[in-house]
Length: 179
Image 1 (cartoon, helix red, strand yellow):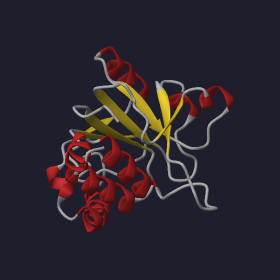
Image 2 (tube, rainbow, N blue to C red):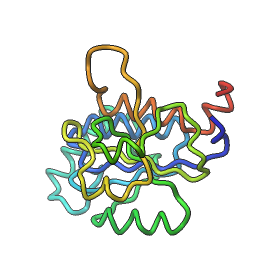
Image 3 (cartoon, rainbow, N blue to C red):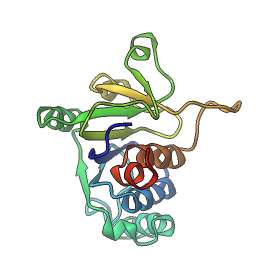
Image 4 (cartoon, helix red, strand yellow):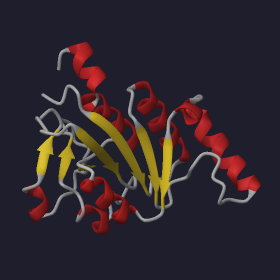
């Protein structure tokens, strides 16, 4: 990979599990991701839009797997993900969806984890644990990133897949390990 000085942000769109959110925040912080963007119905730590008892419950669950990263990792919320993506594209970011269930048109936009992405500013979009990235968001992506599977399962848990992709895309991992 030649993205050695790439900047990386991560979007969590419609992630259902608070534990997946926490695990992704922890991994993102550990790998030096610039920012995590929370959109759709993804649970957010300390969400001011929730009633106090729900906010406390979700924050506690996220914290169980984030182990403090929820306080350290810069986060942003957007309620208009398509508009937000357009703004980021205009600012020169490449928008990549981590997705393995691609239609015929999307197959032509696919890159495998480890390929040179030719981008210095990357936003990695993660979708819902079962359904993946919704069509209205998929249509906005520059291309799709797929992690090749060697076993019989079709996919990894979203937090595990996110960790693999963030590690491979992060400048620190490439510099430290010579990728």
